[in-house]
Image (cartoon, rainbow, N blue to C red; front, side):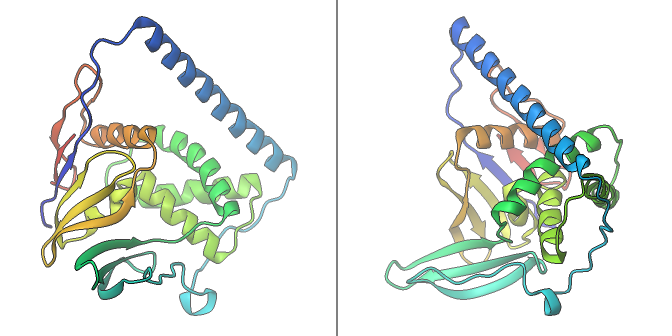
Length: 260
């Protein structure tokens, strides 16, 4: 596996924060935690009141249920190369724009409907709590345990998902809970040597062995989303990142080097 160096450039942390600002931030985080907990309890209560237990086993077949990803190049761009990262859920398209003389690295993944997104957001919180209670060693075991917990929660809550919705949500649960979130596809791409992020609302860039530096379609839309991603990434390396220690240089479980 090619070694991938990830450089995530964060702005200088303010070391001299006023006590009032710190307290306000703590209060906001506490309120948000309570809000999420209440929403989760309400979600479970409503679903359990239905007292419906369905068989969860879903056998998805692309030729029967249709593809889970659909991709059409934006106007002015054409596909010059494409390859699977995780068939049939994740595919890379290398695009080229003749007018701009530019290449674009595009990660195509399943698009969730509003209903699927709501189910994912609720189940994600429940599964994350369950996995935190379990001691897991290798990646293959994590996949199996996550799927078992996913199936159990669907049975207990009575949530109905068709075959395609079932595998789409499972893909994102595995990507975000076991994998590397938004950069998971890039971490698995053996054609990449480097991934870099210069902040939120800015596209990530990669160094491709065939096309050199490429802009991607992957973006962290909010600062809080990027902060959460950086913290989770540091934790995967067994490191801690904070205002007091804003820089981390470590090695990922797969051998990739990371700089936060």
